[in-house]
Amino acid sequence: MHVLIVYTHPEPNSFNGAMKTAAAKHLRTLGHTVEISDLYAEGFDPAEKAAHYIDRVNPALFTPLAEQRHAGRNGTLPDDVQREIDRIERADLVLFQFPLWWHAQPAILKGWFDRVFVSGKLYTSSMRYDRGIFRGKRAVLSVTTGAPEAAFGPGGRGGDIELLLWPIQYSLHYVGFSVLEPFLSFSVAGHGYSYEDDREKIERLEGYQDAWIARLSGIQDETPLAFPGWADWDDAGRLKPERTPETALRFRKHKPAAIDALNC
Amino acid sequence: MHVLIVYTHPEPNSFNGAMKTAAAKHLRTLGHTVEISDLYAEGFDPAEKAAHYIDRVNPALFTPLAEQRHAGRNGTLPDDVQREIDRIERADLVLFQFPLWWHAQPAILKGWFDRVFVSGKLYTSSMRYDRGIFRGKRAVLSVTTGAPEAAFGPGGRGGDIELLLWPIQYSLHYVGFSVLEPFLSFSVAGHGYSYEDDREKIERLEGYQDAWIARLSGIQDETPLAFPGWADWDDAGRLKPERTPETALRFRKHKPAAIDALNC
Image 1 (cartoon, one colour):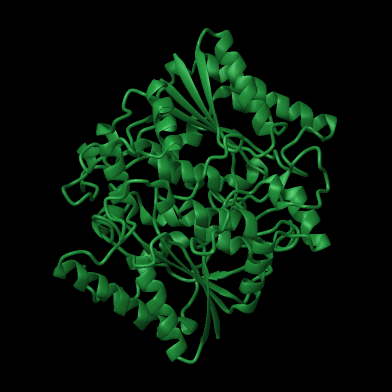
Image 2: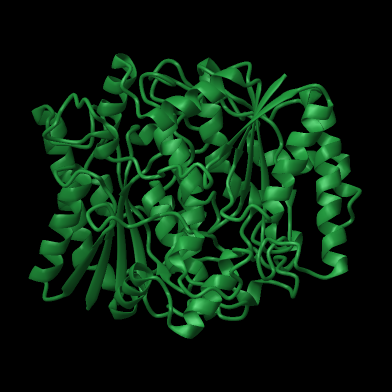
């Protein structure tokens, strides 16, 4: 398969950087091809704004969705947005490697969603969710946290990790991806996401890398998370009364054995 | 009181812009003072990166939290970050006006959290949550959505609005704010967040403005949302078994009468 890694960290020698490099290397060893969107290194502009649109449908009033639709139709999308769309279209699996900052993805990655998922081109009111353009493709989050795993349960100090990742994973579901269980590396911060740490921490971080690599070997056979889809909603978008669909909130009940084995 | 409006929209003549202007005008009429952070107009850089730090604690390895702590201690924070901190410190109430993009705040506002909430200065491991630096100050989200209200219930097509806003509101709780119920304006998009629409839509949008203004008159007397706090957690950050704290997930049960009255 062909894998796109959307990688987000400002420091190449970070744990996130090491996870990205290890994943790319291992996937290539398995015979897959890998492409990397390095948002910081490529200077991706996260702010959706008028300056990105050279041929405006309405030069007097900037309405992002209208300009996205117009540019998508006319082939005048910003170069960096078109490049990211091309990368996604080539990929069978899109892997997101990022640190959790303020209970969500870093701003530069949030802007990737805001700008790259172009209205009219990557979705319409009828081409969404299980009818989304990227159905058949897979997506998976590999996320690092500063706080320890114990703090991320329901009501826990770090916030329920299931709640925190839900908006990101639902955005991937929106454009049709089959979203796999996220891979979580806890307690990565300290004085930065780096290897400048004691032996115990280094061993723990290397354990996460090994578990991630092990999981990637079988990632094509994993069952995706279940999200609500068109069959679950009435015309107004309400959940039908008879439906109680699985949601991605359940992912921690299906933690892969490789993570449990780390004992951390 | 003194109010800071953190306003996020790339188009001044948007509905978000109109909501910001109406709120500022009304608050001043009530005798309050108002300051506005206009993230787009001020060109706020959302990406946390090495270039923002002129005096590095570690020039060889960029670890965001370590550089934030160092710059906060040494008075070398980036000018725009220091300006935002000063603005928050002057405020009794911080009001966030923004559109929901991809199930979260726009990237430029996400970057405001990433960069302005400086480690070591605005929080430490012990100065967080109900022991946070901004306790006594209030915060409230005023959010516009593209999809209609019906789609934002549990399992609904737009995603459960309670889940979507949770990471943002919890981040405000993290630095000690008392977070008030959000104000939600639904079905604002269409062909952009603008007034270039039919009479029925304009009237509906004006109804939201009126309801928001009405709510602001009494916002000082509102009861904040309840989040878990230090008394709810064990030393590892787990929720104590005997605790079932209220969480901000409940906010829709307390929707202000003004919104119900809109009938939309």
